Image (tube, rainbow, N blue to C red; front, side, top):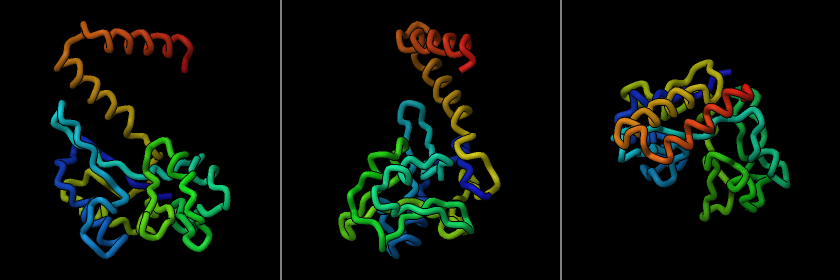
Length: 178
């Protein structure tokens, strides 16, 4: 199945994805209602779009007490069924990435549904930082974490306690294979 592939190095922070998403999802140019967000890393002068990963495990779907999140068989996206959702917002708490939102106007949860297989965010991105293609969800995260860590080390040097702690944790993980 196709997924959104995020390429943070290509993001310029133009926020076109947020505008396109909000337009398609709500009929208004209202980035606060967008289902994709652009994280600004001020210290690194970098940007990273993020949205629902459409996780295989889908904690939002598992946590829903009324089974109001289902899988779209055409796109594989986990979608909120408005007619079933009772607005308890448990799914918003369960999502470890913070990409399931609550709409106070409708009193329902809402999340990325991949625009039914034609994601507006990917179509509107002028730098191809968001691409809709066959991909393993979240595969870009380790490379992006490496970039952020490298920028941190460049800015603050290897002597920072945070870096030493991180090095020790990384070494332990390497020993356990984990």
